[in-house]
Length: 163
Ligand code: SF4
Image (cartoon, rainbow, N blue to C red):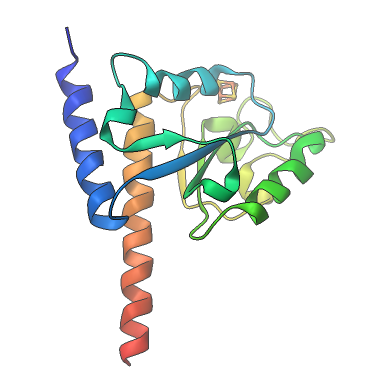
């Protein structure tokens, strides 16, 4: 049996993607040192309950093909350079969603000689989705919030060109 809440969320997401991006949303997942809990929840977006691909979302292998980076983990020192390179390779608008408490601010790992203490210490973040780990439905809400942000930034840019 299908989960009605998941379908309703997905339909809202599909509508927002169409309104803001026109067709589809491509996401690159970046594991910057998570315990894998957040990654499993993110991958659950593709399971038969959420089946997010039917709503116009795909996970891609290259940041060059991505509209959005979803980053898990508090950014270990060993992955700091990888995250910077991935961000610089990503296509505009470079929407970054920090997934999970570690990515949002260090979480249970905190900040130390080995861990930076959050994604925004390294790259700009559009949206923070807390939780240890956050549920897939919270991730969908986070993606929609990032689309809202993108839309409001775009509207501001258009308004500025008219001034
Ligand atoms: S927020 Fe929790 S589940 Fe996610 S990477 Fe950190 S410890 Fe793991």
